Length: 241
Image (cartoon, rainbow, N blue to C red; front, side):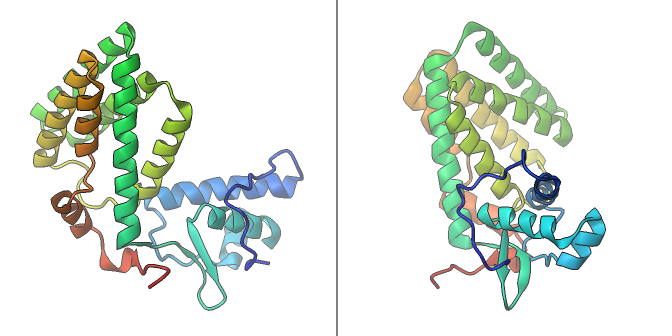
């Protein structure tokens, strides 16, 4: 039954029946579409349409939806059926604050554990960021930006931390609207990268953590600018409201 809520800790059994394996494939496809914004918050997910789309019975579709509900990516109710979950303003703010703290810890650990090889890679990625920013190339900057952060995550040498950080970033990604990087955003982002890289290379854990935390738009001004681009219909109500 769709109204049975599984524990978020439940992991899909991909070694079981073909139906369970197919459910996992459907879950992965829908999750990617939700996290990328292809299925925006509030989108209705009709069981019948999904069975036709994936060419399966309702059993793997229902299992996939249960898995998505456990990940808080869809909401299932008798009144509204299955819809892509909407985050409330408080939830968005809370997630950004959480990401900010995790980024700070990752940068702190990177400053403590940076190797010579990763230090060189970090410097090279910063050069790539600068080159893209000067060329006003948003696509190139996005690639360089991802590489810069990936190197920090590697240097942190804490898979549990990085897994949670990546999961949270995927969750919030669907609430990023507007241009990927405007010229002003690239300039600001690059300036932050300079401070983060400098602190990590110097082994200054506190400065690295503070610079990384400032890089996430969770403060009053930064959060307001972030939220201003989000369509109002994509924002949900607090559950306890």
